[in-house]
Every structure is written in C-alpha cells, then in structure tokens.
Length: 186
Image (cartoon, rainbow, N blue to C red; front, top):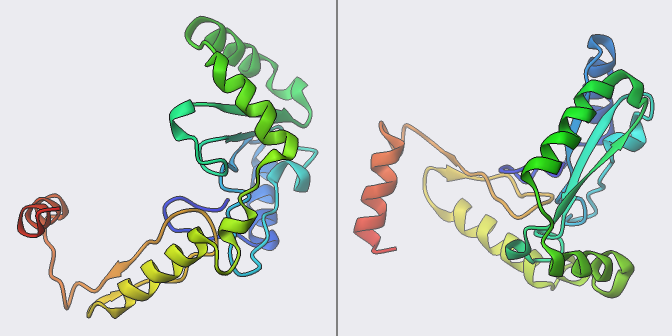
C-alpha cells in the first residue's frame, strides 16, 4: 500500500478488514510498503504493522522508489508482532538470507543518509512537483483516448488504465503489445 500496479491507496477501513481476516485465520501479514511516501491529493498511508501490533507482520521497504535509487538494490524487512508464532519461519528466512544474500556495501551508507532525513520526496509528489505533474499528465492523456479510462492514482508510480473491449477488441495481449511496438517504433 500504495498498490502496484493500480496506484490505489487503501483506506484504513479496508486495511483493518484485511487484518481482521488475517486474525481470524491465524495468518502472517506481508506488507509491501515501498511506496509509503509517494502519495498524492492528500492520500494517507496506514502501516499494517501499526494497525495490527497483535499480528506477525513482515513489512518490506527500501530506497528504490522513495529515494529514486533503484540500481542500489537496497531494501529491508521489518518483523513486528508476536514473533513466537512464526519462530520457525523467521529462522528459515535468517538462514536463507545468510546463505544467499550479501549487502551492497556502498548502499548501506545511502540508507543511513536517506533515512536520516537529508532527502525527501515530498516536493516531487506535491502539486507542481515532477511526479505529481507526470501523474496528472499520464492520467489526462489516457482518459483522452477513446475507449480507454483510468482512475487517477492516489499513490505510487503507476496508472492502471481500463481498455473497453467493445472499442478495442484485443484478443491476444502479447500480440497487441508487440504489434504496437512495431507500428509506433517505441
């Protein structure tokens, strides 16, 4: 939350409903919150871990989106809640990370600088900011195309258009994309 690929930002009530389902079924929560600071038009991010301290919650984030350094491959996972219910799972994750993952040493310094508050994405997502303006233009242009509609994204970096099959009878999406690439020389 915000959602990839729709750009939807789920309100607190929806998240609480999802968390209630997790409670009823004894599930761990995996929360991808990498877009938590890329919000538009007053949308609010609600963290699953904050809303459900009684559930085991694995929250994922990183530098690639908010701090625009995708090439650094720098991310993290925070585990919250009553860990005793997921001890074996977490031990398995630790073993896997120890065997297969190694840190990007220069990026470790970037994490400290980024989280330390020296940089912010706020001016980019505010009205007049580059990301805000790009989101608005993409949304406007998509909605100008006959047979294409799009809800204005409230967060993240994506727009998810609906293509009316009555106007654009696409049978094979892969063929459609390849034909478009060839025709428009994209």
